[in-house]
Image (cartoon, rainbow, N blue to C red; front, side, top):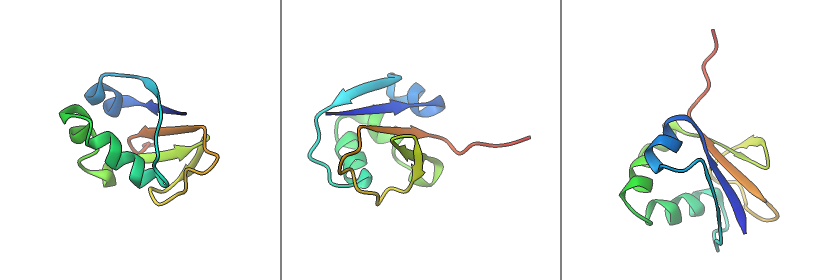
Length: 82
């Protein structure tokens, strides 16, 4: 099982702040593909991965990162400063 967290507009499009899922995904990209195939809400949220950042166990990473031993994945838009 893996906890998946959604923040900001990603959460708004999917309609959930978090969920616990069972996955066979080997990488975060594989997880995104599984999620996007669920329904239109997920497909829309993950339609442009250049607009999403990802963290695995609270460490920023990329979509090619392995999910081996990862307990939590978070998706969020890029942060802006100012």
